[in-house]
Image (cartoon, rainbow, N blue to C red; front, side, top):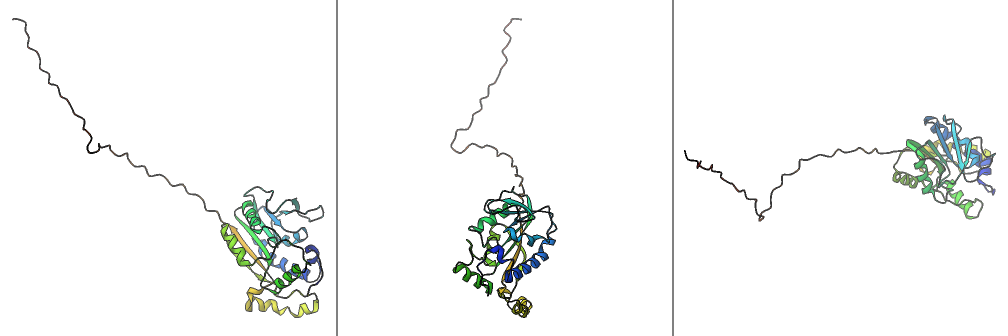
Length: 258
């Protein structure tokens, strides 16, 4: 099993982490080319920006609290993930690559993603599955302090519930990478059969998952008021009714003597 004490960025570049990053890149390659727009926002670590290289959207922006000039070939923008420095309804695609499991307040990150997305914009999420061999490895390494992260792994069902509360509609996603986190390359290749068997035999125990959601906005339809004629006023019972006085006019006789 993986035993080196490494940072998240370095772990993705070597051994089992590198193989996992390749598998995750392949999964995103099946998703991102189908999503179109003008602006893509990547909320993740700078070293993982290559995960969105398959997107057809040319303008890509990376936002992370810890960014330096050599972080990524993408446009870099330092900022807190819980308070994105982006205008509302201005981004077509938002990608969260293991972002929720590293955030202190993952629900707030989802709220900000919903805010910056345009109506019918897409949200793509990747994360480790707690109910897997990768989940057990992750928990053990975090327990002994080999992995320094402030968040925790979230099950896909929990993330789906949060997305529904924010008026997202789940349109895709699946489990992937069923092999355990093994460093030995030869043994890892012998266990390649687990990838094909996992999708059919134990699909809920994949090492990681992807989720694709759409921001749904219900338009407000104005309802025309139904105008009614004003009711005729009638005096209430018991009230005196108005009386009408009639005067008779009698012409005076001519008193002039004839």
